[in-house]
Image (tube, rainbow, N blue to C red; front, side, top):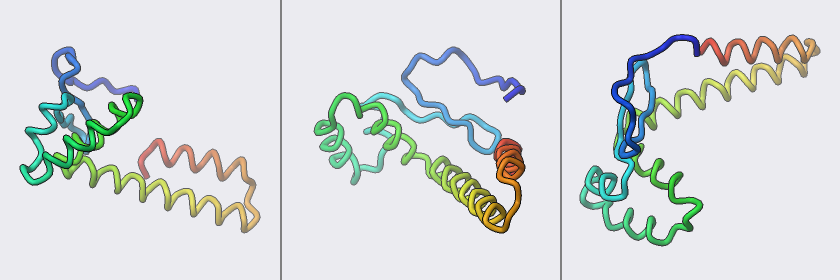
Length: 116
């Protein structure tokens, strides 16, 4: 990405930041912060899950739980996944129909980068 975005002060590791629909969205990146951001009825489930997770998986699990506190992040991720999946299916169909795979791949990658 060539454009530079003003994204605030140097991160201190206590927040996750996601770029969604042209803006930065912050979510907590500490166990206590995530627990506090969750609805009360999900906090015990989070605590149990985080306590039972192997250390190597804790960061990814924390990110998943943190993004669940901001539904717009999950929705943007689903939209992007669906877009890429549709482009990939279309490219596969074109190759099956006899188009040059290297041309199809180049166009697919360009469309993925462009967001179309």
